[in-house]
Image (cartoon, rainbow, N blue to C red; front, side, top):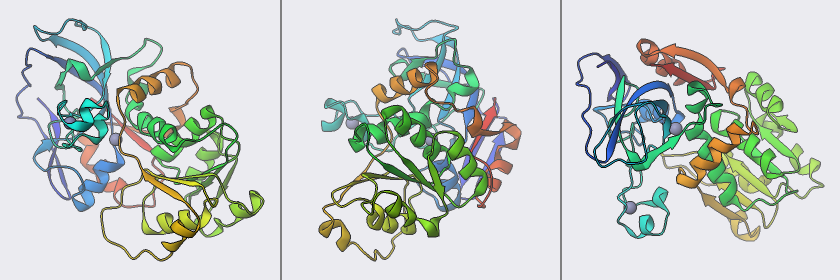
Length: 338
Ligand SMILES: [Zn+2]
Ligand SMILES: [Zn+2]
């Protein structure tokens, strides 16, 4: 079967010679319809990141069940599905406490450490499946996974109705976070984003004010010199991490969604202590966040249509990774039609 194969840093190849996967008794075989390109993939393509070389990439996907393992009771051939791509051990302290995203195998996932969905078919444990309601198209369904990231981030932040929030970055996760914040009852949502096309999308999708990075301190003025109750960092570079500490209200919360893999010099770390600031990292999601993401789409509380900036075929995946690795660009979510 045909697939997009991660050979090594800087090299993704389209291969046509991989065997169609076979299923275990507790698995189903999915004919993949759409698969999104994730920022984490681009990061790994550039620097190594979380991805293991030698696998098929792709973890944001939808498809139709075409084969069902003998032990699988709940699912039928023809079901439209999306998939939680994390593959936890189900046996460690965290898995036994329903915190699978903190599993000791932490980043073990389809498309990250084992074969993913930029392929004609993928085998998946039935326990990982989520039914896609008829009202959500296969294309839209491919954005459930990044939406679940934002749902988890906002839930874990402890944001209350009427709180002010600032979001660094209006890429996929930033734009999802803005919409989830709106749905959760945030008062003012400030967005810091340098690219003009992304600023416009942020405003369209619920931001109250967008600023370029060097003007971040205007937010302090706009919040009576107090600062926002919450800051969400959907970028994760040294500049946004350090600015978050200056920007957030004393006693406020910083939620780190963006990932920074390299060491850097932290300039104002004292602000964390003197400002009584809570800084918290969030990684991935659990099954409940997937369910919430699906219902937010079903109820049209989140609109992903303006976020899909390109639709491509499998053959164009290597070119798309080249494009996404060279910012600034205007792309948000590129979706691959399989
Ligand atoms: Zn992703
Ligand atoms: Zn585990």
